[in-house]
Length: 93
Image (cartoon, rainbow, N blue to C red; front, side, top):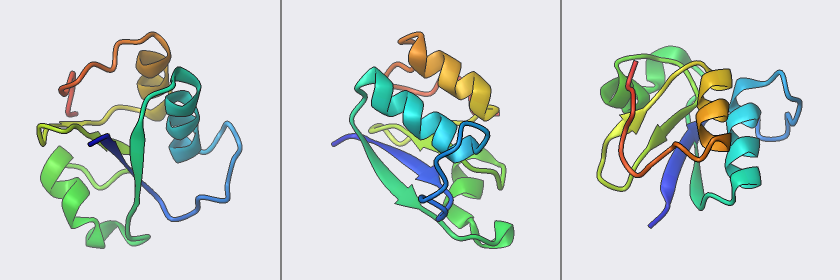
């Protein structure tokens, strides 16, 4: 099973400024196997994200062991590109 990338439903937006695409592109470039999990558009309906990270914001990564990782997208992308994503959460806030 791959990690899960919880992201917005605007998967067609592929510009570097878009937070979800920034992280997804970093995963692709690093060759990390992942499953895309598009979630609700409305922030109050993002129950999985809220339960996992305590926040309502995308993107977030859920690891195979059930732990979550969420930072600002530029920091997430940098960690992924540096090969430091790991297999468990490094940060949840």
